[in-house]
Length: 358
Ligand SMILES: NC(=O)c1ccc[n+]([C@@H]2O[C@H](COP(=O)([O-])OP(=O)(O)OC[C@H]3O[C@@H](n4cnc5c(N)ncnc54)[C@H](O)[C@@H]3O)[C@@H](O)[C@H]2O)c1
Image (tube, rainbow, N blue to C red):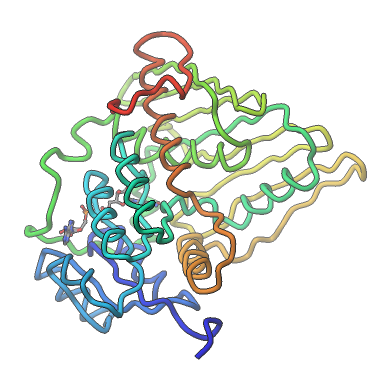
């Protein structure tokens, strides 16, 4: 059987909400993935998910899943605190890894991953699935191929008060277990950190994807009536001016998008809540022809598309375009720099962030 025909045998670690909302279905629908195994410490959850998704194998012990020579790649679908230790275990076992975002809250953890990947060079991708939003991909191609130099990028990401009213209609009711393994500190115990990690990581990834590496940030945060608003002035390494707006919870609709101003054109984008499985609405203005271009981007299942790309990199050696470890590290550093900039009331350069910082 040629690589073109075969499917990547994947093990999904974690049967919690994110696996139930998207990873199992993405594996089932992906043209080049076989949902070979699932793993969870909670036996009731494992049994329920086994009945629904019918993988070839189930495991309650993660190491046993890693010891299975048939399994080629692992999706780490657990709470943030476990992302790095569980990815390290997979890398040491020689498995390719797709780990949920955010990669990590700590620079030191990313460095551990770097060392592990140097020893075991598997494919490693962070689950910033917005890069596989076909509208955003169109914008990226327009920026790279047609727009010329970038003057400025504004990007915003606003979770909203009615978000769960909407997403509860779109997602299955998650099956929970009292036996699920959870971190000692609840992820939402510190909301400022949680919002930045859960949502800010997407915003920073999209900004970097479109305008390149970030050199420095200067940030302000306001908290009022239970809402959090970060305004971040960004300097990109290529001289692009940037402004990021992370606001949670907006009294209104989901509010996400970006504008990019360039030498030969501009880009305007509106991104729906990801659970609608609709691509961003993107308009690219092209000055030489005085025309706007607007892609249909019909396939809006960005979670499945990120997985298909993950498998293509491994099976066919296509150049990886997902968020890699170095980029995951830069996103972590950016979020730490934003926090430090607020505390110290000054611009922070990413190269000033130390290995020990959280
Ligand atoms: N990409 C996105 O759009 C998106 C959206 C929502 C959440 N997420 C990410 O998903 C993650 C949270 O996922 P969740 O809500 O499903 O987490 P969760 O903690 O509720 O569930 C994780 C499951 O993994 C199991 N588990 C953890 N460690 C294990 C181990 N060592 N061995 C066996 N089983 C283990 C637990 O028992 C649990 O059932 C977060 O990192 C979050 O940022 C991403």
